Every structure is written in C-alpha cells, then in structure tokens.
Image (cartoon, rainbow, N blue to C red):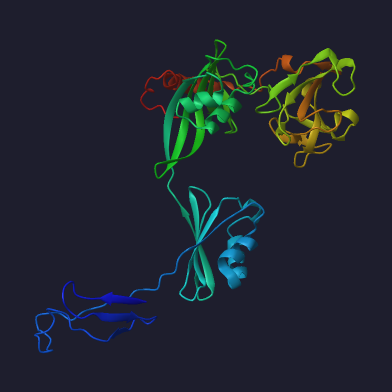
Length: 419
C-alpha cells in the first residue's frame, strides 16, 4: 500500500511505502518548515511519525438457505478447515434445527483462515466461536429480556388479527387469545363485527425491540354480547389453566374445532348431494376447508383405534373418548408423529394434516363424531368442563380474580396484587 504525503503549498513530496511488516521507506523528506533551508533539520520540529496500518480482513458472511446443513455452511465459510468448524458447531446447534435465514458472520486472519465466527440464533441468543492454536472455543451470549405487563383492548371489524394489530399487538397475541377461548368460540364461525377484547399480557423486549409474548394473565372477549372472562391460575399440581371469574375452568372435554383457523365448507346433513358419487346421501360430518398440510388436532383426550387408509375416507384417524364419544378425522394427507393404533392422545395434540385422499374434490378435513354408536352433529356438542379447582385453591383464586378484574376494567390493581 502506498501513501502520498506532501505540503499543502510549495515543497517536495515523500512516498511512504507500507509493506506487510509496516516498514517505512523514506526516499526524501524536505518539507517546507521542517528544515532551515540549508538541509539541516530544525530542532523545534518533531520528527515525522508514521503509525503502521494493520491489514484489513473483510468479514465473511453466509446465510442458511433451505436444504443447507452444518457441513455445507462450514464449507462455505471455513474453506479447508471446515471439518473442525462443523464439529464445533454441531456441539452447539442441533443440525435438525438449522433454520433458513440464520446468518453466520466470520472474521479471517491475515493468512485467510477463519479465526472467529458469530451465529445469531435468535434475538436473544448468539454463539461466538474463536479459534486459537487449533482449538475452537465457544461461548454463548444471552441478551437481557425485559418484561412489562401491558393492557390492550380493541374492537373487531373484520378479523381478530386485524383487531389485535389495531390495538398495537402482534399476530401471536391473537393466536394466544384464540387458544384460550377455543372451547367457547370458533373464531371463524362465531366472530362478529363489533366484538371486543381486553387482554393483560407479559410483553417481552430485548434492547427496546419486541421479542415475544409471555403469559397471558387475563383476557375478556365479548362475542355477540356475551362476555367471556379468562384468568390464568395454577391448579394443585402447579399446571397453569384458565378459569372464569367464578373459578370454573374454561377447558372442556371437546374443542370447538379440530383446526385452529379454517372455514366450514359443508355441514352435517342427512340428505346431501355427494360431489364425487353424484347422489344424495347422509353426510355425517362437518367439512373444514384448509390448505394441504394444515395441522389437525385431537378435539379431546382419548385412545387411537384407527390410523390407516379406509376406503373413500382416505387416510383416517379414529379416536375413542370417555363417556361413549368417538371422533373421526378423514381425508388426511399424513398422520401426526407417533400416531398409530393403541396410542393415547391429548386434547390439542396434532394427529394428522389436512389432505385430499379418498373420495375428495379438494383439500379439506371431514370431521365426524359418534356418541354411544350414533352419529351426531359436531357443531352441536354441549361439552362439559374438566375437573374444577378444589375448594382451598378456589378461595385463593377468587381473591386473585378480584385484583385481575380491576386490570381488565382499566383500573389500578390493589396494592400488593401481582400477576
């Protein structure tokens, strides 16, 4: 690298040549004001000092793409030393959880070898790997998460997502509320313009930026004039659940729908025209239109009695439940992990994915319910709640609920109350 140094006005110039060892070669130095005119240096002028310039090694970047592995990423960023870097990364990152979009940023030594690597796993966590004498050490940086209890309220105009966004919230909050009230409200069929919500939630931030929502401490949803309240509280086994203001559990035996978000395309009927068989016949279920691959959830706890191809039903799962109930899930594209005959499943567990197998004209789920051997309309099930809080915990809950009610209604909570 060469740097040209000279006087602003008259004078001669000196060429300073900086090599890898940063030796300064001075061919000439006769600058105006630095000599007495006879070639003798002036005593009052300090000698010129040149600070060596370190070699600049630009960072190397690579972004994980779909189909990438730790090996392909390591090859791109570490070159011939990729094996040792891959092994070091494999000790910290589950190869099956290598997410597209993750950025790897490395720093090279003057000879071009990777000596430092930073991996931003998410907003909170970052891996820092450094190579020294052939050994790669790894440290994990965890950024501080700041939590704040916030209150949001809004009015539904077209969708719950839109209402939450209008109130300053994120889509995840809409999903969280839908999960809380899923036993009482089908947010696709039951939602009405003018419905309102209030939610008290733990909002978490990192360095001032939104990170995620924590626990929803309480929520109120008014649907078609009916106010539904939910307050989180631990049961005797310290499992968090949601209860109304009287302490009744919101969780019931059956979910309102086996899909989180979908639309009903065909109802339960004793005389429906079959679109494939071209004749009128009973339709013992409810069809939910949804894209292929949409998760299908078990609507209640039970035991799988069938997980196989079943004629016109295509890929199908059948689950037996207490009190003489049986649910059926038809036309699946595939089954949930570990779902097979004899396996016990829990309410909300993914047991399959929407498909179009069997007698089907397009992607949908045909959901059917039997009670004591007879088909019933799934949309008309009157589902009893699960076991309520025991008396001693109920009394503690009622005192807690009074404080939370003040928050829901926009008042300050009593002194000493906390979520």
